[in-house]
Image (cartoon, rainbow, N blue to C red):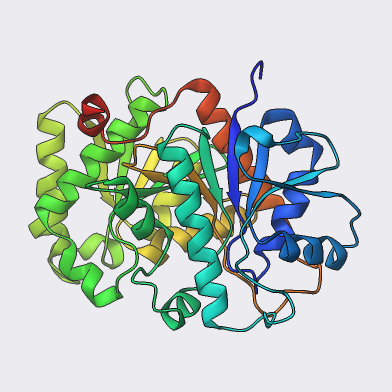
Length: 343
């Protein structure tokens, strides 16, 4: 890369592994080679994370991205007085954790919307801690959508060259089934193919996963394929789109991995998450589509059970930075084309 973009890394819930994987990523040579990165969060928490990980590095507090030292072996942090380590309980659900995570996310969005950073990379947050803090959002995606004015955000996983899109995510399985309508599937197909075009695929081939066992067996195991999924696929094909399916979920991800399809549209959260994490748990990266800013994330949780032990791997955080840097340098736009045109 000839130019290293500026990326903001939020440290996630300070009671989890987020601070540990953030400092490891910031000190990793492969991160420093591709981007100029700084953390957003409480500098005291990062100082403790360095000690937990057995690392020695100066923590450089900054008031703005432009003040970064950007030196190898230095942790730049936009300090927020948000999580006193003497009060914070490691590995516990608590309001302080949710409040601190939320404050960092809000700041990262403001910087990205102002064009002061090229993108945001997020460490994991805990939904129970957000609830304990009375934060009115269930997760990152909902916050980014609200504070960027995004109309129809969508999640994409990138892993080992495979792209997985999600039609539904943070709803119950029962509610996900209710939301699988012909209109929603059609919109999901359209957004997935547009994103693939933006990523450089000239004629992308998308597979739509089936919902029911064996693709429903013509109504024997459920009618969703007949009533919603197949009609949406047929309509997309009539418009010249290259779409296959519904392909049984027990085989579609494998077939995409070996090259039969460029991407898969997963119908619900665990359908795609399980497949991705079985392929490579550590290198699965989440990208939020439909935003006017670039945001990537690790695809794992706060791991409260090992928080504070120094055992957490930073591989996913490093990969999330790498993907954000690559997309930024390539000028990849994954937002709503209409919204972007209006900016």
